[in-house]
Amino acid sequence: MKIITTKNYYDMSRKAANIISAQIILYPNSVLGLATGSTPIGIYTQLVKWYDKGDLDFSDVSTVNLDEYCGLPPSDSQSYRYFMQKNLFQFVNIKAEHIHIPYGNAPDIEKECSRYDHLIENLGGIDLQLLGIGHNGHIGFNEPNIAFEKMTHCIELNQSTREANSKYFGALDQVPQKAITVGIRLIMQARKILLVVNGKDKKAILEQALFGPVTPEVPASILQMHPNLTVVVCD
Ligand code: PGA
Image 1 (spheres, rainbow, N blue to C red):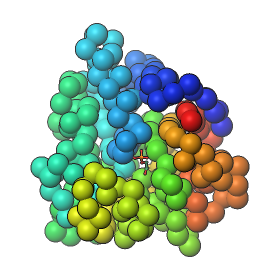
Image 2: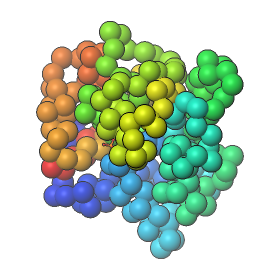
Image 3: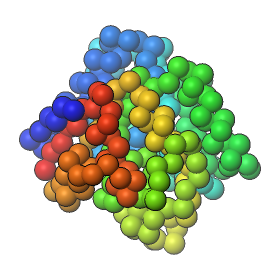
Image 4: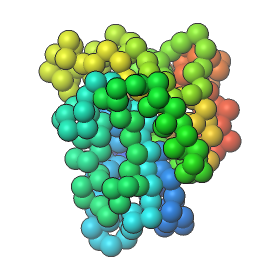
């Protein structure tokens, strides 16, 4: 495990973007596992800047997002599909057919979960997985549980997660109750993991995740077992 401590959010974003950028330059057909939330926005902004300068080419890159709310169509401004379009995809030359995000509005959610697992397997797995961490230790929407859920699945979101995300929806009751998330298996099979952590309020859970016992009650603690984990952190 490598831990990189940074000065501030901007520094964290640039350092993490540098790691993703190096991946794309070295392996132009990389499969990137991408994340949403407030933490990675600065990373995407930085990648777009380097793309604009001509330093990055996304034409052979494929992306697979970690999760999506159930019940929201891709056109909904709260969907993660919309988030990715707004913060990254609309600005770079990624091919539409190379973008993959669970379809939260699928009529058969179980079928959608298994489609997503197969899709990522068929892509050859994830080369670099970008992750944030929730205040409860979740990664993707793998919430604290009695066991690690291996496969892509539909999850009932924790109250604390819905409260944390209600800032985007305006009111708690607008936040969907459920989401689709890739499971722990695909995350752990990623060849590299880049965990970005912003804010003093994440310090305690990060400490538990990286140095506490490996337990499904702190889903991110499984990352201790990953052979190629980089953590970029700022206070
Ligand atoms: P945040 O969310 O970046 O908005 O803090 C991270 C997460 O919940 O995974």
